[in-house]
Image (cartoon, rainbow, N blue to C red; front, side):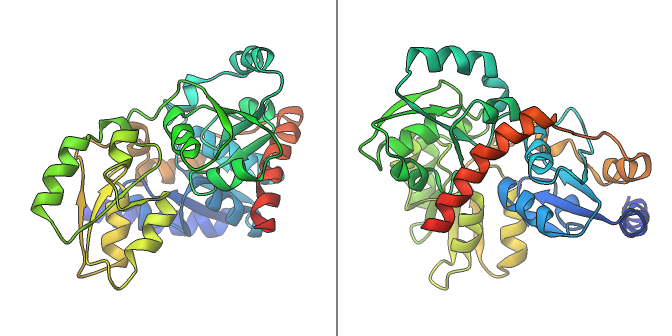
Length: 307
């Protein structure tokens, strides 16, 4: 198996150079895929990095909406998703048609769209946000009402940090709702010195027990602090590979071994190799959708620059 892996890695390396390609890998991917990344991180950070490179080809090792976001920000690059079936259940819980209907019910509301959503939903939104900047985006808006889509739990978390009236779309991440408060209580007893860090896609009961509520990039930064020696991690367990690699000697305990996103595990070294050989599957957002979706992403980036 190791020989086959090293052979695949060599071929990927040669093709990466030949195609002038960059490999973007999300924090939840398999360890073997993380280890060959040019850039590793969360979805928006990766797309922004791609836009800054002079690569002709982006291989996005993540899920479909992430490849779409890369296409929105990098229209002149070829964006490849090594497994076209790697979707996001939360992103599939909302449609542009459904959002249009909800907007008619709340004509005064500003639509804030979590980046974990399809391109045509971003196109129907006023501004995007990430899990890291959702509170800042909400606070920046000159609006009393916010229609927050599609993650009700991230939206609920934002509602505890702002005085805005939040109307929440009933979507959620199936992986994060598998993280249970009872297990956190057990781990706190077992590891009394450990910091409990959870993702804001978790339920309010889980968030209430955490020392910190952070995005995946926030967790990676937090883990590097000197005072953090043990960390109970409340997100998809793929991130543990990166945390251990970047922080040797520290202990990282997943809250739940069940916190696995099957779609994030679909991409393998072999599939990365195949997609570079065949230059497919390609993800391309139509020009009309791209321009409207990019406006909501750009507005978010402007808010980030102002802060």
